[in-house]
Amino acid sequence: GQNIDQPTEMTATEGAIVQINCTYQTSGFNGLFWYQQHAGEAPTFLSYNVLDGLEEKGRFSSFLSRSKGYSYLLLKELQMKDSASYLCAVLSGGSYIPTFGRGTSLIVHP
Amino acid sequence: DADVTQTPRNRITKTGKRIMLECSQTKGHDRMYWYRQDPGLGLQLIYYSFDVKDINKGEISDGYSVSRQAQAKFSLSLESAIPNQTALYFCATSEGASETQYFGPGTRLLVL
Image: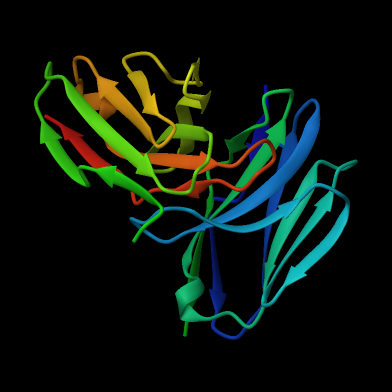
């Protein structure tokens, strides 16, 4: 089985930087996704990490350490529209079906 | 037009009723999935299908069934709805293993 842990809620100020952590315990790790989900809407893809290190994509970056079972999503220059839930999902085992964490609700205030 | 569509978008039904949620996609993906989302619980996998002849149970398949009518269509049925099946249901597709999932807009289901 898998155990994926994310903070339930975080708050941050517009213009600031926030780091959302995800830790996981799994066998046969194959990759890790981050999705963004605005309230009442569908999740949308942000990033995918399979190797250790930092992947940068505009204001969003994602980091992975396979040996530590740890990833984070870094959001820079926060905007009000970044208020959303951020879902960490881990691919493991032979089926390549992602298992989702419970998500982190990010609230950005002025 | 949206690549992944779900119908209906909202549904209210009564305990014991049979209902069907439908999902269609124009992305040409072989893999399709059904998830439910409850507040604070994230996305839980109900069923998934890797091609038209392949159906697999997910972590919470009890009380649900599915049908893969074509590559583009994957339906979820609740044979006898119960109140704890009240949730937001998402259909998703992906091209293959280790690939991004694309989600439909969701169906909000209320079972009274």
